[in-house]
Length: 83
Image 1 (cartoon, helix red, strand yellow):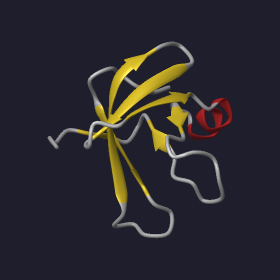
Image 2: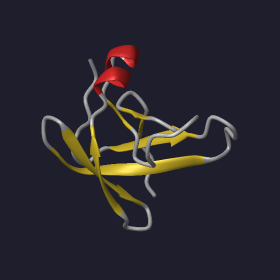
Image 3: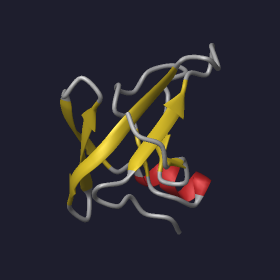
Image 4: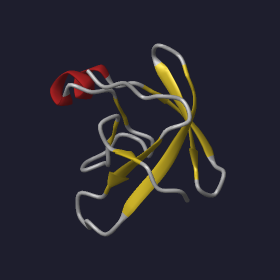
């Protein structure tokens, strides 16, 4: 199972508009939470979602909240380019 790593960048896309995407850098983590930083410098603490993790077979968080069609940040969506 893939896990989030500190210092790596990850991307998630909107379910409604594939051109809309968010990129985050993992700046800290514990076993149950990760801290994300966006390009604008906004920091977000997210709890790793066990149900999504079991479904996708990789760690998953919902940095924008939980609602209908909310985007899910998955550890398998790692990116290598810079901001």
